[in-house]
Image 1 (spheres, rainbow, N blue to C red):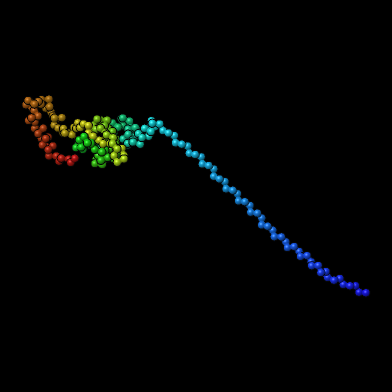
Image 2 (image 1 turned 180 degrees about the vertical axis):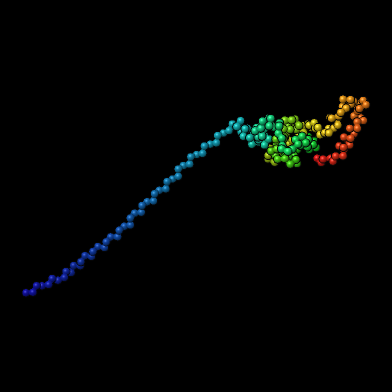
Length: 205
């Protein structure tokens, strides 16, 4: 006898479970930014003493002359010379200019400009003239800057007025007197000298 064929089972086949989707890996947490370190408090400025404040103020008010006075010796100031310049004539010129201003004086920067001197040479010369007693310097605050006014104290003795005078080399000077036969009143040498001086052109101030 033939065997009965097995009937296909009516039971449905189990579906294979779909593979589970892999969960995305957790994102690594970004490293936390470090908080900037706290700035150290700046040290509080030290309070200056009254003496220190006065010294700072004095330093700020210092002029070129005061700096030079500290740097130069008395000898360097007194023997100051400007190369290729007749210092006696220059001193007389300064006195002539300051004499016109009388007691009001003149700002040194204005004077140096007029005489075509550098401020450094002019400042040294001012120190020299002050030491000689020819001028005095008055410290003044002008347009926010400290400077000096130069005021004539006394006019220096000049030998320019007797330059070439015959009396200095007179061969009969020992016999000369006001009432004598040889006298300045009737001296031909003096007369000739005066006339020659009058003919010289007057230098503009």
